[in-house]
Image (tube, rainbow, N blue to C red):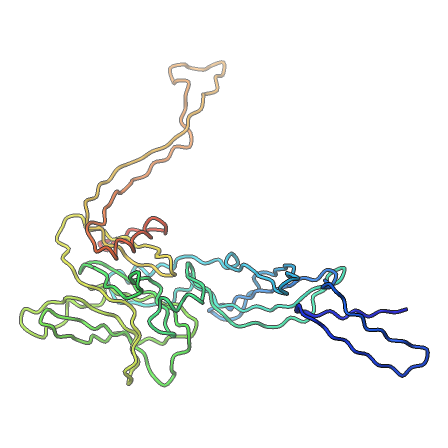
Length: 363
């Protein structure tokens, strides 16, 4: 006789009933006691990058077998994207500037389906959700622990262990930058601009409004955030002798009370001879500077290997038997962060993990 097998894509009990009116034909429905795995069944996923400049690029096609007990499959995508830290421009070391951190994020989408048979053939591919990936960032389900809003994800971790924001210590000469990712489409009814709220020693505050910004959905930006870069030294004090204590940066909606917190800074005295600023890959997508106010020293290290010289018939032993090969040397700077609050010291453990650059704000 002829048999027809019906298989569910999800585990469960299948109830089959049949009726027929044909002569000499008998139909018997038999429920299988075990799950049936179709021959050659596997999941297929095609990954596409949506280029910031337009168009899309096919990245990779992945295949993996289903778990027959859960009817599911998991793909690890983090190695499919060539992401790296996006350095700000050198011009922005001394002045206000902003830009898109194109190297540190990707927009992407995927198509998924299944293959089966021998040889395995893919069936219809379904388009999945358009998503984004950030260099060094956390999984999307964990974002809620860090950003101040569902719209903006700050690509830094200026937060205590209880997730409350702490204020970062900086000097007047220290360049710094803020990185943020626009997770949702901002209201097109408003213009957006960079607002810096300055707190003075007389307990008053000043709104220092700077360049307009046109943020795009699913895009990462960097923007200058240092005292000198923002031109805070040129502000007129609200009273005689008043000085700047701290400042906070926001992305502000024009004509609305809505503003998105980007970062807070306290201005401290930089009166020592060892100030050095390191640009640190902060581990959550952005870059930030670290004030090293402790003592520093410069050393030099070298390394080389040696080999024995080939001795020909005219060998002159006065030149020696050993020659150096693969010689290299490098200057080494040993720096100290100096005394900081415990929250900042905890934060600076990232110095031991990420890439580092020295910020040369003189040259």
